[in-house]
Image 1 (tube, rainbow, N blue to C red):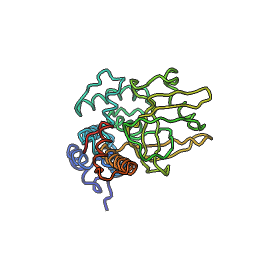
Image 2 (image 1 turned 180 degrees about the vertical axis):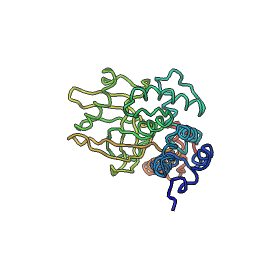
Image 3 (image 1 turned 60 degrees about the vertical axis):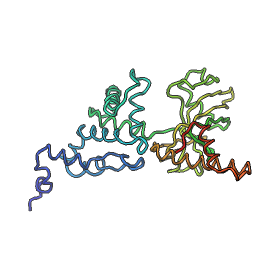
Image 4 (image 1 turned 60 degrees about the horizontal axis):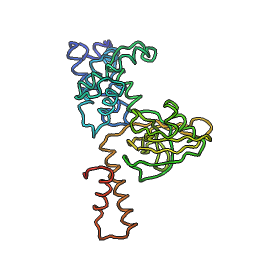
Length: 309
């Protein structure tokens, strides 16, 4: 019996252009349709079919096509367009007014090129810019590591500034470490509202603290760190995330989370439920049930600068 690769995979007998067209049809990438689904044909199926498929999957052609496909999707239904856009229009970029999928992807590649050159050991000499861009954004933008502050508060919501006092040793370390790369004046109460890329960490506001739980990324708007290490902070919740990993760091029980972005549509649904809970709590507190719940809800939306959906 002939067991050669050619007889086992007659697809390889086709012209290269036809093979590329066929593979392009089944080539998908991690987290393309689900933010927590890491298995994909490009990483877990096609490369293991045969050596030729493995070589095909390294081609930048497929990764560019996949990135363009992601960029053209609805921002509300998938987080990828927002991740690429944030990277492409980062404040270190001379032109932050880039618009359109192709222009944004081109700008992201231009920003990625020096990163690949500076970290050649990390990328193993692979100069496939689109593949490297995807891998970088997957591990640095789409999913990421942040220290965690944990205190249940189910009414937290984007756009609603909160104030906290840090006194536990683990949270003294948290705020010290996230503020370390910023000038000392920002640790002494100077406002960070106009600072690009403000200090960030994760506020785990739902119980229990566990994998697959929803949490909030918060940015430090103002911070005063006192001589004894305690701190007063003002925080702006900016986005909801899923916690996909938890790791204890050090002896003070400070946890680090690996988190993943979620689509805006999912964030909006979470916040619609939170605002409804707040509205119902307000109506119970006032005790006037003749006022429809929608009136309370619209007032909350107005105060948060939200339009009714």
